[in-house]
Amino acid sequence: MGRSISVLEYALLGSVAGSPLSGYELRRRFLETPMRHFSDSPGSIYPALKRLARKGLVAPVPTAERSRRRKTAFRATPAGQRALRAWITEPITRGDVVSALPELKLRFAFSGAVLGMAEVVHLLEKLERELRFYAADLAAYYRKVAPGMSLTGRLALENGLYEYRANARWASRALAGMKREAKNS
Amino acid sequence: MGRSISVLEYALLGSVAGSPLSGYELRRRFLETPMRHFSDSPGSIYPALKRLARKGLVAPVPTAERSRRRKTAFRATPAGQRALRAWITEPITRGDVVSALPELKLRFAFSGAVLGMAEVVHLLEKLERELRFYAADLAAYYRKVAPGMSLTGRLALENGLYEYRANARWASRALAGMKREAKNS
DNA sequence: GTATGCATGTAATACGTTACATGATTGT
DNA sequence: ACAATCATGTAACGTATTACATGCATAC
Image 1: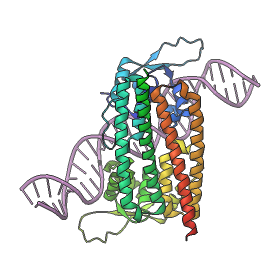
Image 2: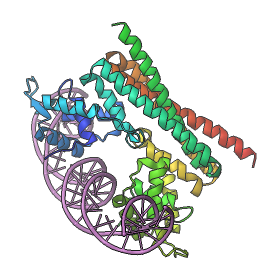
Image 3: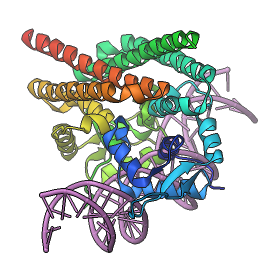
Image 4: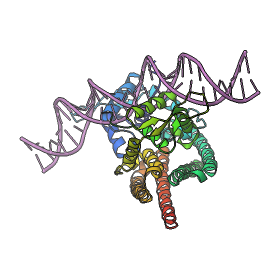
Protein backbone atom coordinates (compact mmCIF):
# COMPACT_ATOMS: atom_id res chain seq x y z
CA MET A 1 0.00 0.00 0.00
CA GLY A 2 0.99 3.63 0.29
CA ARG A 3 2.98 2.50 3.28
CA SER A 4 6.05 4.32 4.39
CA ILE A 5 6.06 7.97 5.41
CA SER A 6 9.06 10.21 4.79
CA VAL A 7 10.60 12.46 7.41
CA LEU A 8 9.31 15.51 5.57
CA GLU A 9 5.82 14.04 5.68
CA TYR A 10 6.12 13.47 9.42
CA ALA A 11 7.33 17.04 9.83
CA LEU A 12 4.24 18.27 8.04
CA LEU A 13 1.97 15.87 9.87
CA GLY A 14 3.33 16.91 13.24
CA SER A 15 2.95 20.57 12.31
CA VAL A 16 -0.76 20.18 11.61
CA ALA A 17 -1.44 17.93 14.60
CA GLY A 18 -2.38 20.90 16.74
CA SER A 19 -3.94 23.58 14.56
CA PRO A 20 -4.61 23.44 10.81
CA LEU A 21 -2.14 25.06 8.47
CA SER A 22 -2.01 25.65 4.74
CA GLY A 23 0.84 24.65 2.46
CA TYR A 24 1.98 28.22 2.32
CA GLU A 25 2.00 28.60 6.09
CA LEU A 26 4.00 25.41 6.36
CA ARG A 27 6.49 26.74 3.86
CA ARG A 28 6.86 29.91 5.92
CA ARG A 29 7.46 27.84 9.02
CA PHE A 30 10.21 25.95 7.31
CA LEU A 31 11.64 29.22 6.12
CA GLU A 32 11.40 31.34 9.24
CA THR A 33 11.59 29.03 12.22
CA PRO A 34 14.47 26.80 13.28
CA MET A 35 12.87 24.07 11.18
CA ARG A 36 14.87 25.68 8.43
CA HIS A 37 16.80 22.58 7.53
CA PHE A 38 13.66 21.45 5.73
CA SER A 39 13.32 22.84 2.28
CA ASP A 40 10.62 25.45 1.86
CA SER A 41 10.28 24.78 -1.86
CA PRO A 42 6.72 24.35 -3.13
CA GLY A 43 7.91 21.40 -5.19
CA SER A 44 8.49 19.38 -2.05
CA ILE A 45 5.74 20.58 0.27
CA TYR A 46 2.63 20.57 -1.88
CA PRO A 47 3.22 17.06 -3.24
CA ALA A 48 4.03 15.78 0.26
CA LEU A 49 0.84 17.32 1.59
CA LYS A 50 -1.13 15.65 -1.17
CA ARG A 51 0.43 12.30 -0.38
CA LEU A 52 -0.57 12.69 3.25
CA ALA A 53 -4.09 13.57 2.18
CA ARG A 54 -4.24 10.56 -0.13
CA LYS A 55 -3.16 8.35 2.76
CA GLY A 56 -5.92 9.83 4.88
CA LEU A 57 -3.50 11.24 7.47
CA VAL A 58 -4.44 14.86 6.93
CA ALA A 59 -7.65 16.42 5.64
CA PRO A 60 -8.53 19.90 4.39
CA VAL A 61 -10.58 21.91 6.85
CA PRO A 62 -13.51 23.99 5.55
CA THR A 63 -12.21 27.46 4.88
CA ALA A 64 -14.43 29.56 7.11
CA GLU A 65 -12.36 32.60 6.20
CA ARG A 66 -13.38 36.16 5.46
CA SER A 67 -10.58 36.36 2.89
CA ARG A 68 -11.48 35.38 -0.65
CA ARG A 69 -7.95 34.17 -1.23
CA ARG A 70 -7.95 30.55 -2.15
CA LYS A 71 -6.22 28.70 0.60
CA THR A 72 -6.58 25.15 1.88
CA ALA A 73 -5.56 24.46 5.41
CA PHE A 74 -4.95 20.88 6.47
CA ARG A 75 -5.33 19.21 9.81
CA ALA A 76 -4.21 15.79 11.03
CA THR A 77 -7.01 13.23 11.02
CA PRO A 78 -7.43 10.68 13.84
CA ALA A 79 -5.52 8.23 11.64
CA GLY A 80 -2.85 10.90 11.24
CA GLN A 81 -2.59 11.33 14.99
CA ARG A 82 -2.19 7.58 15.37
CA ALA A 83 0.50 7.44 12.68
CA LEU A 84 2.33 10.31 14.36
CA ARG A 85 2.13 8.59 17.70
CA ALA A 86 3.34 5.30 16.24
CA TRP A 87 6.33 7.03 14.67
CA ILE A 88 7.26 8.90 17.83
CA THR A 89 7.05 5.79 19.99
CA GLU A 90 9.05 3.59 17.63
CA PRO A 91 11.88 1.89 19.50
CA ILE A 92 15.15 3.82 19.46
CA THR A 93 17.82 1.44 18.31
CA ARG A 94 21.52 1.76 18.87
CA GLY A 95 22.85 3.74 15.95
CA ASP A 96 19.69 5.76 15.33
CA VAL A 97 21.44 8.45 17.28
CA VAL A 98 24.23 8.39 14.70
CA SER A 99 22.43 8.07 11.41
CA ALA A 100 19.11 9.71 12.26
CA LEU A 101 19.59 12.17 15.10
CA PRO A 102 17.64 15.02 13.48
CA GLU A 103 14.69 12.68 13.05
CA LEU A 104 14.87 11.65 16.71
CA LYS A 105 14.86 15.29 17.74
CA LEU A 106 11.86 15.95 15.56
CA ARG A 107 10.08 13.04 17.18
CA PHE A 108 10.82 14.48 20.58
CA ALA A 109 9.72 17.96 19.56
CA PHE A 110 6.32 16.63 18.51
CA SER A 111 5.97 14.16 21.36
CA GLY A 112 4.28 16.68 23.66
CA ALA A 113 1.32 16.88 21.31
CA VAL A 114 0.44 13.20 21.27
CA LEU A 115 2.05 11.61 24.34
CA GLY A 116 1.46 11.84 28.06
CA MET A 117 4.11 13.23 30.38
CA ALA A 118 5.28 9.79 31.49
CA GLU A 119 5.78 8.64 27.90
CA VAL A 120 7.65 11.80 26.99
CA VAL A 121 9.97 11.21 29.92
CA HIS A 122 10.50 7.65 28.78
CA LEU A 123 11.37 8.79 25.25
CA LEU A 124 13.81 11.34 26.59
CA GLU A 125 15.42 8.77 28.86
CA LYS A 126 16.02 6.45 25.93
CA LEU A 127 17.42 9.32 23.94
CA GLU A 128 19.73 10.36 26.75
CA ARG A 129 21.02 6.84 27.19
CA GLU A 130 21.86 6.47 23.53
CA LEU A 131 23.47 9.90 23.37
CA ARG A 132 25.74 9.12 26.31
CA PHE A 133 26.55 5.73 24.92
CA TYR A 134 27.57 7.07 21.56
CA ALA A 135 29.50 9.96 23.07
CA ALA A 136 31.53 7.40 25.01
CA ASP A 137 32.06 5.39 21.83
CA LEU A 138 33.27 8.46 20.03
CA ALA A 139 35.65 9.33 22.86
CA ALA A 140 37.18 5.87 22.70
CA TYR A 141 37.49 6.09 18.94
CA TYR A 142 39.09 9.50 19.27
CA ARG A 143 41.72 8.24 21.68
CA LYS A 144 42.51 5.41 19.32
CA VAL A 145 42.81 7.21 16.00
CA ALA A 146 43.49 10.86 16.80
CA PRO A 147 47.30 10.52 16.91
CA GLY A 148 47.42 9.38 13.30
CA MET A 149 44.98 11.90 11.89
CA SER A 150 45.42 15.16 10.05
CA LEU A 151 44.82 18.32 12.07
CA THR A 152 41.50 19.18 10.46
CA GLY A 153 40.33 15.59 10.53
CA ARG A 154 41.08 15.39 14.24
CA LEU A 155 39.34 18.68 14.91
CA ALA A 156 36.29 17.54 12.97
CA LEU A 157 36.19 14.41 15.07
CA GLU A 158 36.49 16.49 18.21
CA ASN A 159 33.58 18.54 17.00
CA GLY A 160 31.43 15.44 16.76
CA LEU A 161 32.46 14.45 20.25
CA TYR A 162 31.63 17.86 21.72
CA GLU A 163 28.34 17.95 19.92
CA TYR A 164 27.20 14.60 21.24
CA ARG A 165 28.30 15.53 24.73
CA ALA A 166 26.32 18.76 24.48
CA ASN A 167 23.32 16.79 23.34
CA ALA A 168 23.67 14.33 26.19
CA ARG A 169 23.95 17.16 28.71
CA TRP A 170 20.89 18.80 27.24
CA ALA A 171 18.94 15.55 27.62
CA SER A 172 20.01 15.20 31.25
CA ARG A 173 19.04 18.74 32.11
CA ALA A 174 15.76 18.49 30.23
CA LEU A 175 14.96 15.28 32.07
CA ALA A 176 15.70 16.86 35.42
CA GLY A 177 13.52 19.83 34.51
CA MET A 178 10.65 17.62 33.46
CA LYS A 179 10.74 15.61 36.64
CA ARG A 180 10.80 18.78 38.71
CA GLU A 181 7.81 20.08 36.80
CA ALA A 182 5.96 16.80 37.20
CA LYS A 183 6.05 17.21 40.96
CA ASN A 184 4.54 20.69 40.85
CA SER A 185 1.40 19.38 39.13
CA MET B 1 27.65 19.03 -18.74
CA GLY B 2 27.95 16.58 -15.90
CA ARG B 3 28.03 19.63 -13.71
CA SER B 4 26.98 19.47 -10.10
CA ILE B 5 28.53 17.16 -7.54
CA SER B 6 26.50 15.73 -4.68
CA VAL B 7 27.59 15.77 -1.06
CA LEU B 8 28.09 12.02 -1.16
CA GLU B 9 30.33 12.43 -4.16
CA TYR B 10 32.38 15.04 -2.34
CA ALA B 11 32.63 12.73 0.64
CA LEU B 12 34.02 10.02 -1.62
CA LEU B 13 36.27 12.43 -3.47
CA GLY B 14 37.71 13.80 -0.25
CA SER B 15 38.26 10.29 1.05
CA VAL B 16 40.41 9.33 -1.93
CA ALA B 17 42.29 12.65 -2.06
CA GLY B 18 45.06 11.25 0.11
CA SER B 19 45.43 7.56 -0.55
CA PRO B 20 43.48 5.41 -3.02
CA LEU B 21 40.56 3.39 -1.73
CA SER B 22 38.20 0.86 -3.25
CA GLY B 23 34.43 1.06 -3.16
CA TYR B 24 34.35 -1.61 -0.52
CA GLU B 25 36.86 0.20 1.68
CA LEU B 26 34.82 3.36 1.34
CA ARG B 27 31.72 1.48 2.39
CA ARG B 28 33.53 0.20 5.47
CA ARG B 29 34.60 3.72 6.32
CA PHE B 30 31.06 4.91 6.15
CA LEU B 31 30.03 1.97 8.28
CA GLU B 32 32.73 1.97 10.94
CA THR B 33 33.94 5.52 11.34
CA PRO B 34 31.99 8.58 12.50
CA MET B 35 31.16 9.19 8.84
CA ARG B 36 28.32 6.84 9.60
CA HIS B 37 25.60 9.26 8.63
CA PHE B 38 26.45 8.41 5.04
CA SER B 39 24.81 5.28 3.83
CA ASP B 40 27.12 2.34 3.31
CA SER B 41 24.82 0.73 0.78
CA PRO B 42 26.47 -0.46 -2.42
CA GLY B 43 23.58 1.00 -4.37
CA SER B 44 24.70 4.50 -3.49
CA ILE B 45 28.47 4.19 -3.39
CA TYR B 46 29.34 2.29 -6.54
CA PRO B 47 27.18 4.44 -8.81
CA ALA B 48 28.55 7.62 -7.18
CA LEU B 49 32.10 6.38 -7.69
CA LYS B 50 31.34 5.69 -11.34
CA ARG B 51 29.91 9.16 -11.78
CA LEU B 52 33.08 10.65 -10.32
CA ALA B 53 35.16 8.52 -12.68
CA ARG B 54 33.02 9.58 -15.64
CA LYS B 55 33.59 13.21 -14.68
CA GLY B 56 37.32 12.57 -14.53
CA LEU B 57 37.58 13.49 -10.85
CA VAL B 58 38.77 10.09 -9.71
CA ALA B 59 40.65 7.36 -11.59
CA PRO B 60 41.32 3.69 -10.86
CA VAL B 61 44.89 3.01 -9.79
CA PRO B 62 46.68 -0.04 -11.20
CA THR B 63 46.16 -2.84 -8.73
CA ALA B 64 49.73 -3.75 -7.84
CA GLU B 65 48.40 -6.18 -5.27
CA ARG B 66 49.50 -9.65 -4.30
CA SER B 67 45.87 -10.57 -3.75
CA ARG B 68 44.01 -12.03 -6.70
CA ARG B 69 40.78 -10.59 -5.42
CA ARG B 70 39.25 -8.29 -7.94
CA LYS B 71 39.31 -4.85 -6.45
CA THR B 72 39.55 -1.43 -7.98
CA ALA B 73 40.92 1.35 -5.88
CA PHE B 74 40.30 4.92 -6.93
CA ARG B 75 42.33 8.03 -6.37
CA ALA B 76 41.48 11.70 -6.92
CA THR B 77 42.90 13.06 -10.16
CA PRO B 78 44.39 16.56 -10.37
CA ALA B 79 40.99 17.73 -11.66
CA GLY B 80 39.44 16.01 -8.65
CA GLN B 81 41.78 17.84 -6.28
CA ARG B 82 40.83 21.11 -7.91
CA ALA B 83 37.12 20.35 -7.67
CA LEU B 84 37.57 19.44 -4.00
CA ARG B 85 39.44 22.63 -3.35
CA ALA B 86 36.83 24.70 -5.15
CA TRP B 87 34.06 23.14 -3.07
CA ILE B 88 35.89 23.65 0.22
CA THR B 89 36.68 27.29 -0.52
CA GLU B 90 33.18 28.17 -1.70
CA PRO B 91 31.93 31.23 0.17
CA ILE B 92 30.00 30.45 3.34
CA THR B 93 26.76 32.35 3.15
CA ARG B 94 24.53 33.27 6.01
CA GLY B 95 22.14 30.38 6.45
CA ASP B 96 24.52 27.69 5.21
CA VAL B 97 25.16 27.06 8.85
CA VAL B 98 21.47 26.32 9.29
CA SER B 99 20.56 24.32 6.25
CA ALA B 100 23.88 22.68 5.45
CA LEU B 101 25.98 22.43 8.60
CA PRO B 102 27.02 18.80 8.09
CA GLU B 103 28.32 19.71 4.66
CA LEU B 104 30.30 22.63 6.10
CA LYS B 105 31.86 20.30 8.64
CA LEU B 106 32.78 17.86 5.94
CA ARG B 107 34.41 20.66 4.00
CA PHE B 108 36.42 21.61 7.04
CA ALA B 109 37.40 18.01 7.75
CA PHE B 110 38.87 17.67 4.26
CA SER B 111 40.38 21.14 4.14
CA GLY B 112 43.68 20.03 5.63
CA ALA B 113 44.35 17.86 2.60
CA VAL B 114 44.07 20.58 -0.03
CA LEU B 115 44.53 23.92 1.74
CA GLY B 116 47.40 25.67 3.40
CA MET B 117 47.32 26.48 7.10
CA ALA B 118 46.36 30.12 6.51
CA GLU B 119 43.42 29.14 4.33
CA VAL B 120 42.24 26.55 6.83
CA VAL B 121 42.30 29.21 9.53
CA HIS B 122 40.33 31.53 7.30
CA LEU B 123 37.69 28.86 6.67
CA LEU B 124 37.40 28.16 10.37
CA GLU B 125 37.09 31.85 11.15
CA LYS B 126 34.21 32.20 8.73
CA LEU B 127 32.59 29.12 10.20
CA GLU B 128 32.99 30.43 13.73
CA ARG B 129 31.50 33.77 12.84
CA GLU B 130 28.43 32.23 11.27
CA LEU B 131 27.98 29.79 14.14
CA ARG B 132 28.06 32.60 16.70
CA PHE B 133 25.78 34.70 14.61
CA TYR B 134 23.18 32.01 14.27
CA ALA B 135 23.45 31.01 17.93
CA ALA B 136 22.63 34.60 18.82
CA ASP B 137 19.70 34.55 16.38
CA LEU B 138 18.39 31.39 17.94
CA ALA B 139 18.71 32.86 21.43
CA ALA B 140 16.68 35.89 20.41
CA TYR B 141 14.08 33.69 18.78
CA TYR B 142 13.94 31.55 21.89
CA ARG B 143 13.30 34.52 24.14
CA LYS B 144 10.52 35.64 21.85
CA VAL B 145 8.57 32.43 21.33
CA ALA B 146 9.48 30.14 24.23
CA PRO B 147 6.72 31.37 26.57
CA GLY B 148 4.02 30.30 24.13
CA MET B 149 5.47 26.92 23.22
CA SER B 150 4.74 23.40 24.37
CA LEU B 151 7.21 21.88 26.79
CA THR B 152 8.77 19.51 24.28
CA GLY B 153 8.82 22.13 21.57
CA ARG B 154 10.64 24.52 23.86
CA LEU B 155 13.11 21.86 24.92
CA ALA B 156 13.80 20.96 21.29
CA LEU B 157 14.48 24.61 20.58
CA GLU B 158 16.79 24.76 23.58
CA ASN B 159 18.60 21.77 22.20
CA GLY B 160 19.27 23.58 18.96
CA LEU B 161 20.54 26.57 20.88
CA TYR B 162 22.91 24.49 23.00
CA GLU B 163 24.14 22.63 19.99
CA TYR B 164 25.03 25.75 18.07
CA ARG B 165 26.72 27.21 21.11
CA ALA B 166 28.75 24.04 21.50
CA ASN B 167 29.72 24.26 17.85
CA ALA B 168 30.72 27.89 18.20
CA ARG B 169 32.83 27.12 21.26
CA TRP B 170 34.47 24.27 19.42
CA ALA B 171 35.35 26.59 16.56
CA SER B 172 36.85 29.15 18.94
CA ARG B 173 38.95 26.59 20.73
CA ALA B 174 40.05 24.96 17.48
CA LEU B 175 41.05 28.35 16.14
CA ALA B 176 43.06 29.14 19.25
CA GLY B 177 44.75 25.74 19.00
CA MET B 178 45.64 26.24 15.37
CA LYS B 179 47.14 29.64 15.98
CA ARG B 180 49.19 28.29 18.84
CA GLU B 181 50.43 25.47 16.64
CA ALA B 182 51.24 27.88 13.83
CA LYS B 183 53.73 29.66 16.09
CA ASN B 184 55.55 26.45 16.95
CA SER B 185 56.40 25.77 13.32
C1' DG C 1 -0.49 50.53 -12.66
C1' DT C 2 3.14 48.15 -10.84
C1' DA C 3 5.83 45.72 -7.45
C1' DT C 4 5.46 42.71 -3.57
C1' DG C 5 3.56 39.13 -1.08
C1' DC C 6 0.08 35.42 -0.92
C1' DA C 7 -0.98 30.88 -2.68
C1' DT C 8 -0.67 26.70 -5.34
C1' DG C 9 0.89 23.92 -8.61
C1' DT C 10 3.67 20.96 -12.53
C1' DA C 11 7.66 18.95 -15.21
C1' DA C 12 12.36 17.29 -15.79
C1' DT C 13 15.96 15.39 -13.65
C1' DA C 14 18.95 13.16 -10.68
C1' DC C 15 19.68 10.96 -6.67
C1' DG C 16 19.43 7.78 -2.65
C1' DT C 17 17.10 3.60 -0.82
C1' DT C 18 15.98 -1.02 -0.88
C1' DA C 19 16.22 -5.35 -2.48
C1' DC C 20 18.18 -8.60 -5.26
C1' DA C 21 22.11 -10.95 -7.37
C1' DT C 22 26.67 -12.92 -8.17
C1' DG C 23 31.06 -14.85 -7.27
C1' DA C 24 35.71 -15.28 -5.21
C1' DT C 25 38.48 -15.98 -0.97
C1' DT C 26 39.60 -17.07 3.68
C1' DG C 27 39.05 -19.49 7.91
C1' DT C 28 37.38 -23.58 10.43
C1' DA D 1 32.09 -28.54 3.45
C1' DC D 2 30.32 -24.41 5.06
C1' DA D 3 30.03 -19.84 6.81
C1' DA D 4 31.63 -15.41 6.83
C1' DT D 5 33.72 -11.78 4.64
C1' DC D 6 35.40 -9.56 0.53
C1' DA D 7 33.88 -7.21 -3.57
C1' DT D 8 30.96 -5.32 -7.08
C1' DG D 9 27.09 -4.54 -9.30
C1' DT D 10 21.84 -3.76 -11.22
C1' DA D 11 16.77 -2.65 -11.20
C1' DA D 12 12.66 -0.55 -9.34
C1' DC D 13 10.98 2.94 -6.88
C1' DG D 14 10.04 7.12 -4.60
C1' DT D 15 11.27 11.49 -3.58
C1' DA D 16 13.78 15.98 -3.22
C1' DT D 17 15.58 19.71 -6.15
C1' DT D 18 15.21 23.10 -9.50
C1' DA D 19 12.99 25.80 -12.53
C1' DC D 20 9.00 27.31 -14.50
C1' DA D 21 4.21 28.90 -14.42
C1' DT D 22 -0.06 31.08 -12.93
C1' DG D 23 -3.15 34.32 -10.69
C1' DC D 24 -5.23 37.04 -6.93
C1' DA D 25 -4.70 40.72 -3.38
C1' DT D 26 -2.70 44.59 -1.32
C1' DA D 27 -0.09 48.72 -0.86
C1' DC D 28 2.06 52.58 -2.88
